[in-house]
Length: 327
Image (tube, rainbow, N blue to C red; front, side, top):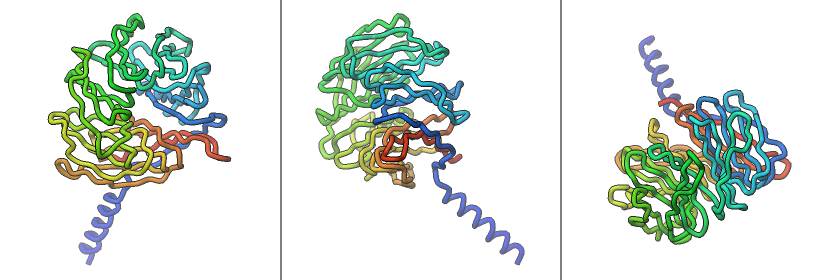
């Protein structure tokens, strides 16, 4: 009887473990006084600081995630969108859509360091560790290539339409770019600085967020019309899987350790999609949030997922920090 009871208890424990949600709310940090919607994030992993573009408020909010508190606010921005943190230089870069600038700040005292101009409708930002170049999506269709040693624009890669989320290969030379206005994913050769090919988005459109699993040659693209996650094979350029997600997605991130994708959706949910076998994906969890909460960030080094929730009625804006379940 004792052996049966022990086996039953062990089985019950395994069942509870299997049912453990992939994300658990750890902290909620109030952000009172911040109006309007938010855009992209960046993180200082070592310093435990999260940089959040408060687009509607024209500020950059700096959050101490290690101690779960608001640390500082950079004001005087103009529709801040993309954010970048350069660890070695301790510098923060912010793209500004309204005045077409990419502004750089000192990460210690938050004072201005440099301004790159002539980037109309500046949006998403990425850093290429191999070349020391910063990429900024802007205008009716271009990627600016900026030398961060002197903050000069080196080149402008022409695109068929305004770029939304884009991802750089670390080992290869390609950049994958969402172009929702032309219903495609463009593939850029960053050595030649030209578009080498494009993958049409005919069935599933309004492709805004994107994540890359370079090691396994998979690209994850979030669509809004209809609400769908598309998985591309980056070798063939073909879609290998698609599945329904919640509506109005704006950010998604791939977690290689958990083989999962975290998708923040403005409909009011975080969807977690897991890979169960080769090219088979399924939604394993849907966490309610708040309508309009569609911008987020995942930090693999800290095993944390961050979601910013905009002000709604009497509910002020807030940042929610979720811990990612160990695998």
